Length: 141
Image 1: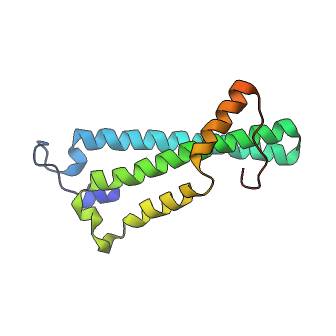
Image 2: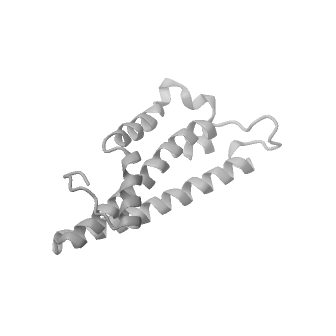
């Protein structure tokens, strides 16, 4: 966001002088903040569920914690990839210069998403909510 405020240029057809005045940029930043807030809320919910499962471990509390963690993993993965892609879209071509090293944010987000793939999380959630099947027990879930 700071890069957009201080270094990005307005699009030639935007009718504004600065990138931070562009209504599409403003909308995109609002959307990203909303999604980040949602991810934080789901992450907090997962943390509380894990705390409950640790305090009183049984099949039900552990399964609920696993589901909450899976939901958090899905949402945080989606927002991380979306946000890091949007970073370049909103910041413009200057953001790709090596001197800014902004590509590290996309690379870090992508690396974290590759462990424990999200595509499996959707099936775990569906099976839990539709068929009452608890998730498989793994150290990472």
